[in-house]
Length: 114
Image (cartoon, rainbow, N blue to C red; front, side, top):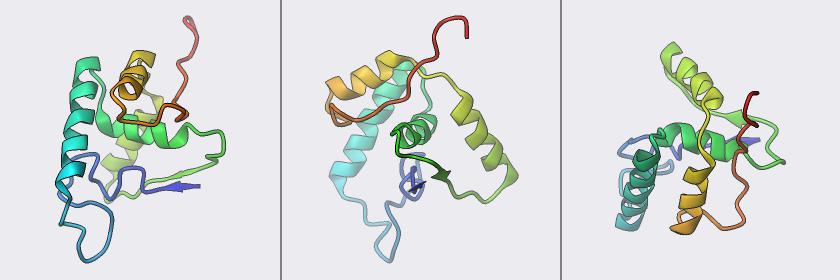
């Protein structure tokens, strides 16, 4: 079971990172990495929040993804994110720029025509 795929909302733009009393004290390096992730996502027309959810669910040991929400719209957005196709080149670029580990499992694209 995977939890906190969006890191307390940080990946999707929240001004907090992790949970706890100091969640609003975000190290500059994490903000910079998020900026780089957003740049790669923008280059591929990918929503970074969608990518984070799919990335979290990619390992074969991930049986469930637990995502918090505070509205019905967020539930629908989560569902849509999990149905969205992300190009393989996006994941390759993240690895090329060392924004994710080289051996990190990434979502697989469905074969053409499926």
